[in-house]
Length: 610
Image 1 (cartoon, rainbow, N blue to C red):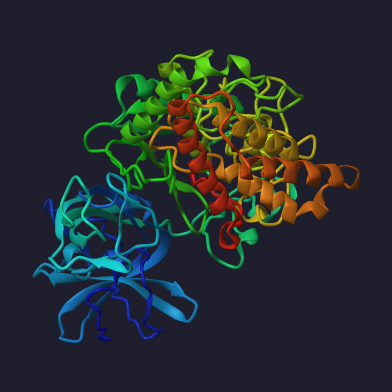
Image 2: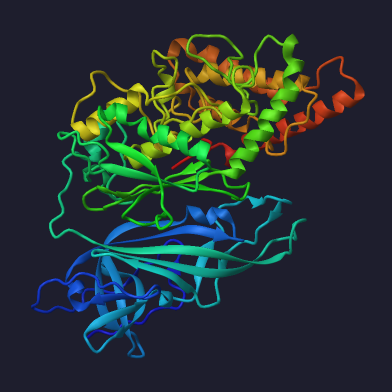
């Protein structure tokens, strides 16, 4: 049998592939398949006969304690793999998890094993290398005192601990805790410069069907309909030929509750919000295909047997997303193995509470302005809703209604990703008859909530094509992430005509800050930066603006940017009021400086959900 050496630190946040070549030999025998054997809480037992099958292998970070919460963004999407019994350089038996790479079979991970006297294989999931390399690729700072992180990577040095192994007939789940010692660039006010935290990884192996059924509709076909679906597997050169990502739903039977979605860790009143947001998609299916329920203790993220939406408390304030959906799909068939959605709970609640309180204090100042505040239009106009992103709608909604409305949209958006749908940043250029954007898969402006209760017209058409094969009756407005650098009308955080939106938002937002005598809350560090970057992008792409509108559009955008650049406190303010306005405008100036730096002129990405 071929021997393989295995590097100590080859378990990476993005898993490294070490080429094995085609000399690998799989164990085989003439007996029929024997399914997984149930074993101890921290060890897994396989039969040699299991090695005849192919498996889906995946890895996710599912929890952090005392370590940066952005580690939750790390995942390795499922790949089809083989299990190979081999030996390392010292002759110790190993179980290799390998998949097809560009130059042959490539190793993903290797685990030490013990072959028992009765022919079973006992797997030690803690042995895949003592070091977990977590790369500092997120930027940002420690939130409580802006203490910057060290560059490079943090590595665990202690032996990882397997805290749980769970098996059924076709699936092995292993939870592995790595202890990470790290050091911030400077000591924050609330703690020591040197710290120790934990990162919990969940690894799974799921037996692949012998002859998987490949879905008939492909990514290329979806794009031909101006609809965006994720491919079965990402990051390859042939995505357009792949089947679209989709749930297994029998649309002909109309059987209810074909997919159960479990809500984990939600406060009771927000569990109802999540349930309504998920089940709102049933209107596009025409029957109750999905049902949301509260999860039991044994159900959690990273398990391909369960659809899970998890409310997480205590995330770093630097975490940029309100929701994140690294959904697991079968890379061969496109079938969604399981929903994985993380909802940023208490941190986002805290931010919203601060913004709502701030708006309540600031609102009485604006009775002398022609514009309005927050989610109410600042400039009346057909299909337009320019907003100042650091305001809440205190006029029509209580703080509770406002925050729950926001979470409803976020969860609905994230579950749209789980259904297979990509972002649609052109969705808000079309306003449905109910006055709402045609797609919840767009990013709406800043901290904005609205009256959305159901998917938009684009979302409905996308589901009817992807799951029912029904072609849209008219051309849909669609663009996605990679289109942002190519199209002037493909932007995050705007509504309606992009030129009219940015001009109104910049002018009215600047007017607000010039008159504002309430300090901006701490979480508003760089107000209006996103809309400034969109304005600069429109200038760069002015050739795409229709000829009849271009000269006026360019003049209006430059006028609006000059208004921001030359902002001054309003006349008639007292010395103390002027000091507050100047502090607010200093933040605006920092936004302008950042937005106009050449390296920063790429389209802004708010990262509200993936």
